[in-house]
Image (cartoon, rainbow, N blue to C red):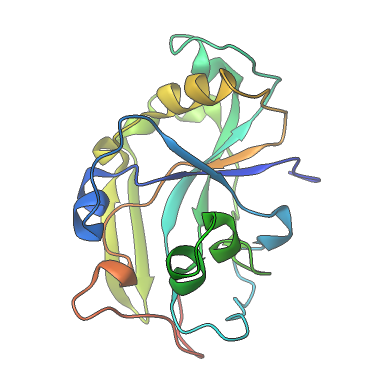
Length: 198
């Protein structure tokens, strides 16, 4: 996927992640943007940004839009998907939550969007709500879940977003992260130079 027009994200979209964050389950999808300049390859080094103390990991199912979508029904929503991929929606929690304003500034540092390596075409995923997601930190599984814990399904997300904006071919949507992020641990745990995420 070249020249990604938009990099969208859905926040608090897994029930167990909302619970670990101490936040209420949202009534509607929480949408925010990530700068496309955050995109990087799946095996590239992630660079902890200057002045960061709370860089965190978030494995997510990525959805790549295949054709222009506007005012799409939930029933037809998956017809607009080109394919699926894995995304690590990296987050700097202090920038995101403690500095005021919108979440985008805690999400958009260079290399904060490892994506891929594969685009699995939509015909190979008849149901995106039965997929396992896992993230390991230094060989220890910290996130292990399934897309069946999503609060809003891929169908609902695409339909909902298309009521407010025109989704473009090549747009990427990160559909939310399951429980197991560093911010939700007790005590909290954040990335250090040399850590390895898989």
